[in-house]
Length: 424
Ligand code: AMP
Ligand code: GLY
Image 1 (tube, rainbow, N blue to C red):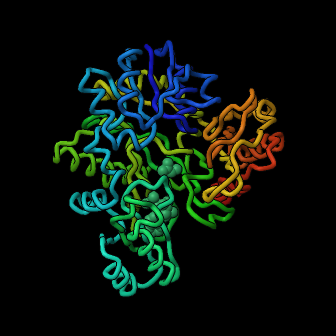
Image 2 (tube, helix red, strand yellow):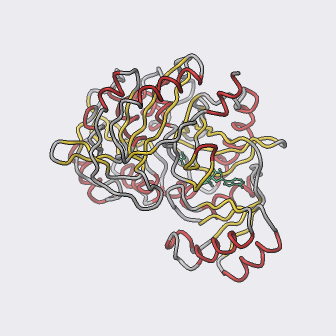
């Protein structure tokens, strides 16, 4: 089977890498891909958000399966258009993708479906938002309702900061249209985990647990990013917690979408906070997490092509997954300055040596300039290693990263620290 993967980040590299190693897959095509993906797939220069051009590409390539990686084409309705032309597609349609596309929609649906989540209010007017924030007090969470690449969330411990964030969002200064509605939320306390599910209609198959580090700096300090590292499994997700997330969070929200006529085929990502009152939903995404997808793909032993095709064709019932028992840990290398402005076009060397030291390097924001790999995005590389313990996987990755020759690169030095603390 030929598979077309849409996207060009670390998540899509991990998917292409795994698809290439799937017996059911004969060829992987990726749009637009990146220089790392080019090792595992034939890359075609069509942007992941150019829906018309992607349709033209699909008609020409006639893939047996289309896998849509990022949220933007899902929210734009690419899956619906492909399905209308008879393609097997892994990824939800536009109506279900609203779960990620609009935090307002998502919170209201959770509320209706009785899914545990933080108390919230939606605001479109700056003065009313300010009044509410002052009345609630801090800590408080302020979120742009629309898509903001993981950066539209401010956890504020200072009232003025929260008011400023909400005003800035509503004025369209920080996130454009995505900030025209603002969600304010009660601040939840606990450890976070990412619980992902392969969903095909009524069948919901949990993937192994994972945990990512969204904050830029060591100790989970600094601004939120798309994710600076991740590992799988997450020891805080016990079997009991996993079961609770499946029964109280995933099943009811998928059922609530179905009741609205929005059947879900694709990845449901529940970001959960493990509070003293049980797991509560922080957010839903409608695609694999990035970087979570990278350690997950390193551990998955099952044939990914077969799995995603079964989901696309609603044959998922009875399917089980096989995992490598080891821990996988991924450290993201970003451009120094990210998530704010950074300098592009810097030469990145030593990648072969990083891999030779026992890791897999997935590319995210790279491009080729005069035959040399350079940085072109905020998050640039994901370096994943395996170990019997998290400490071991962590040691493999950080040792390998000593071979990276890129002075303008930045990475956290403590990915996995919570799990490591549990091991000693
Ligand atoms: P989200 O994109 O909604 O997942 O938010 C990004 C990050 O902000 C989460 O991974 C949490 O670390 C933090 N966050 C979001 N909502 C809350 C909340 N209600 N309480 C505490 N932290 C939150
Ligand atoms: N790592 C968080 C996300 O993919 O949204």
